[in-house]
Length: 331
Image (cartoon, rainbow, N blue to C red):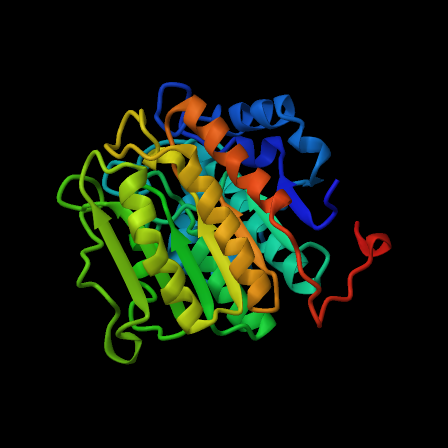
């Protein structure tokens, strides 16, 4: 077992879903973990229980008014939390708060040196905005993690890398003028897919110009297009030398997803996780948090996320000067 890699598994995050007949259903964590156990990955990682976020943590990114709206609709389970994509359901607040809390907990463990790498499968809800839900995303755990790293841990230069088929608009636009948020996103061209954003000329505003990299690819793009573009992402990240790395590894970019049009294989997910783990080691801190993101084909979810976890486990770890955790320190 690698005691420095953790995976968050539990019904509390597994319940985040919009019903059995919705693309984002509650089956997603189960199919991943069934495959992980079939591959024996549960023997190679620490398993962490989900944690519910306090409202104050959620409000690092979201407005109080919106959070209160979600709490009200969580009781009734009726209506939509946006203009018609993201329905409320009974307990939606608690499920979404556990997604945020698990990501925040992983950030704390990585910053404390208890773990080196972490994976939260039901997370990476990258469309939610500060004042409303969007695209099946209630609370933006990635946005919360960035704010938490700044305010609680003094980490300013955070890298966010997104290989989900959809553009991570809920991270990009709130941080578009933030020069310390290093953003790299390869996604299906917004002319063909929700949310319709992420043009190549969107590179940040003002002092942040040049700290954002959007790589739209056409429908049907396969591994060749990904591997052709990946060196640009890695060069970009190495230039900016982030102090913490977040990977949103949605599997809806894999061939056969029912609502997107890309044709990547799981080699893409394995490569992105491995190369970012190498980068974190090379930068001297080793901190890499992977979050599951989208994906609506059960087989793709299972195999794509397992490829990420295997890369987190198998990518070698270097000695880190500030590393002070010992096996006996682990919970």
